[in-house]
Image 1 (cartoon, rainbow, N blue to C red):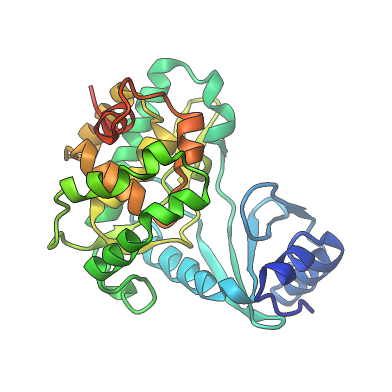
Image 2: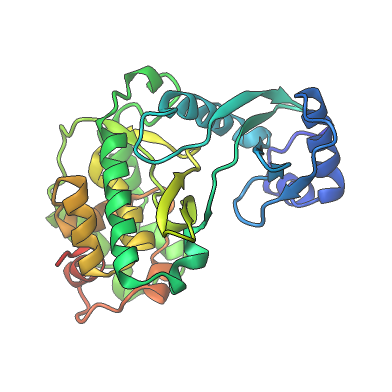
Length: 307
């Protein structure tokens, strides 16, 4: 059985080790009635995920991330059949090994949008972005109250305050140039984020890597990876959209927001990007269009503006 994983050292020693993880996954599959089904580990993702035969997927959460497995299972059960795009069907979840958690779910049909994006015609890209905007709008329209016992952060304004306290240092640890880091506080001071926004169910990572499409029709066939879900301001979900789905294309961002049914202030979205749990602006500056001016307002318009 799999040992406890509570430190970075334990993670590095256990999680990538297929000689250790695969047999445990196979034993668990046998316990779940899937004995003999071939296991194929997906290359992406931070935790081990296996295709089990042609119809199931098994996601394993090490000890330190076990709570995220509970979140994934609860959100999948809550969403089943309620969005205009498929989400994985939950088949089973529970604990195994030394404090690990597992989620057994259905596989989604289609291919990873991030892999096929370069060969998708422009008109089909636009339609896919529209479908993604409609899906996010439907997600945000659901009542998140049944999930409040497992989803954070609880007090949204307190969460933002904590993120604000560490905003500059967080980017410095990711080697953001000082010319940008020293301007973060001033920019955040200038943005009036809402303090009473209604809490909605947030995916938090709506990006190409978490969407699948039919390569024959270029239609959206699935949305997955709900372990980082939260309850909070809807605008927070537009951060990943701008950074990882529309990627600084104002036409696509405008199309997404039209399909969503609401326009968002680019400076609000950039502020949430700076406060986001996973923000890494060194990476964003490397991968996204360069702003024409050395100001955060210019960054906001370049990455989150719409046409």
